[in-house]
Image (cartoon, rainbow, N blue to C red; front, side, top):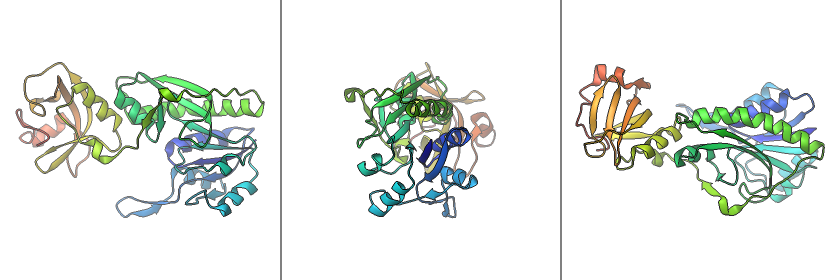
Length: 312
């Protein structure tokens, strides 16, 4: 099976690796986003998918757009049986969707149609969903609206962050992709239309969303912290300081106004919320590494003393 692959981040690279390891699949080319500035020096950096493709001496294509007729001609001349798209980041026009013999399929990190859009993993945690999964769909011109070829499910655990759920879905998606390709190649795949009325839009995560609003419930803030770990990392302010919050858990304790520290000890920072309180166990001060609160208190205990108001 001659497969074209299109993807950009680590999640996509895990699926490309599965295709490369499959004996009956030939990856004939890889599409990825153009190199972007990264790091303190803002040096142009290849995507994880591009790096993996180059390690395997695969042709790599990085067009700014696939709406260009010349780019469409190049893709057509590759004569792919199918194109697999995983978190690519570019819109595929209809002419591209129609080019491979078996069309284009997409691996999406959600049980469709629940979360369509750019950030389904984070939005599922933030919303308090009890499960998520991977859907493989036949792509059409809409945003994650294509007919579903495969759905694999997994539980969202109480401690899951977007990072840990990302890893679960990588492990779920790769074998599901291979199984779907086998079914398509054998003519046995069954496509099921989505019910658009059940869909939500998983908007791209912004840094502005990461600021903690202590008037929210402890349960809501716990989900926000886990959803935004590792990016963009939830944070609170203390004067001019921005303190990132990496790990916390809701508790039933209450008694002070939202944002006030109830207690600060080896168990962590207990902070009052709009409803109940949040026990924060891992934070990051500006210019420092992530640390357990118990360690921070040894040198900066006066900064996080009881009755201190966070978010001020």
